[in-house]
Image 1 (cartoon, one colour):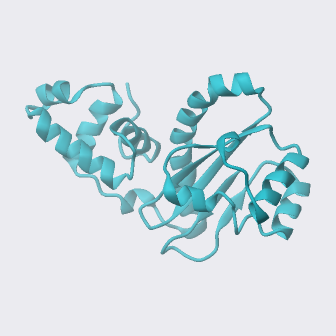
Image 2 (cartoon, one colour):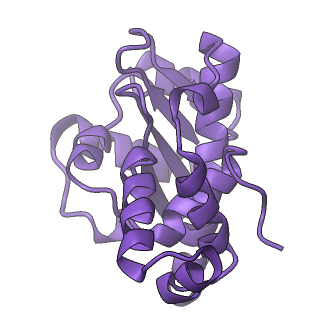
Image 3 (cartoon, rainbow, N blue to C red):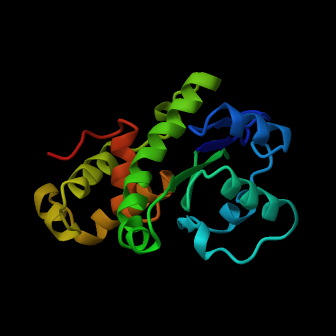
Length: 204
């Protein structure tokens, strides 16, 4: 399930899921695509949101989670937020029927996979729905891209500096700049997002 929330791009959210027509009609009738209860939480955190760790909900959010359970859409769920370069963001939710033990053991790997998938989905929505090429919006310098390529291939700042003839501090400066432009949570996250958007080649 993915919900795209425009920033300066436009006013209409974009919503898509794989839960079938019955749930889709129910969700639209209750305004869930327009008013996702997780939206407020995503404003305050970039971290994955495990639904089982949320405090007890009240009002409309409580009804949302109750409906989700009654439609048997998954015993476990993880939601991640991605912030785009235009003031926009998207919420990607993956649900699972896994047992609690299996879910706890696998959710970190699931979150890692989602962090790579979500930028690509976000870019696709921008391109298809609004005709905007996100790559043209984010402008990395040649040196920033070069450093991210090395990061994507597992090199440290010291190793990158030795290859490029730069000090580790200078390498960190370029990487930090790229992390900021890509609104990433770490250098590895920035490299993954850059690969997903086609800004740098996949690791060798």
